[in-house]
Image: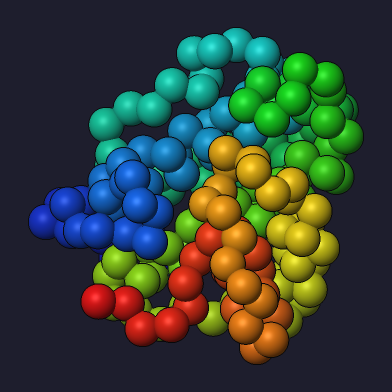
Amino acid sequence: MVARISPSDLALATPCAEWDLGALLAHMTVQHRGFAAAAAGRGGDPEVWRAGTPSVDAYLRSADEVIAAFAAHDNDFLLPEITARPVPRRMAIGFHLVDYVVHGWDVATALGLGYDLPTEVLAAALPIAEAVPEGSTAFAAPLPDPGGSTFDRILTRLGRSVGPRG
């Protein structure tokens, strides 16, 4: 999905109220880099969590980095944006999964594209999304459960409107 972003798209609005597509892309890139560093035991370094200039190439490299880091390390993660305590690896990867389920939809929505994910991905993401505490600053406030698909439940739980945008 991100590979479809062109430089002229970076100013597009996203479902993330405070971010245009460029800011969202920078956030997604730094989250990949931060989680890769956390997997390698360097998550406590504030430099790995600083966003840079949005770039599709940087994002794609960071995606490769985080996948490799998740595969190479089995230790707990330091995730200072979430908690001061180490987070078990499986839980940390789950947090990252939910972030990308939602932000992938944000990117697709900004670009006016459809976005479908495998049932297994959504089934894994739903209980994690449901565990995000209300009042968390990680996502917007939950919206009423539409009683729809698993994906709709994830999106509304994390503050996304699944109705028509405009």
